[in-house]
Image (cartoon, rainbow, N blue to C red):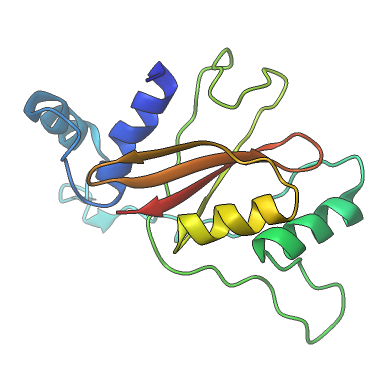
Length: 165
């Protein structure tokens, strides 16, 4: 297992509230370095963001790429007219992890981001993508974490699918 995959898999249990993959010492360290809930000496709670409000990135052909995400992954695009609705994602865990700029986890070293989408049924999703001629690789399962698979959008951007355990 690559170092980057191991790093990601160590973070996932923390995100979902479990220290299953972390050793006792690593879990204690993760707990010790998390942001304080509040600072009693100042009498205020830290304001935190509520979630990811958007994902914006450059594309050679934004319209075609947007249509690909909508057609194959069901991600609706930001409406351009009044009355349209934005994609509504389901509540659930979100891993937020900066990687080294030299990380090979995303594949192509020129790619600076990767999106990880949660799915309900990995087998069905992979079959659907493959039936559309989309190459899906690296299906892996990890006890207590779930199933993972990888693909790339038409512009080569890496995508990871995750079906939580």
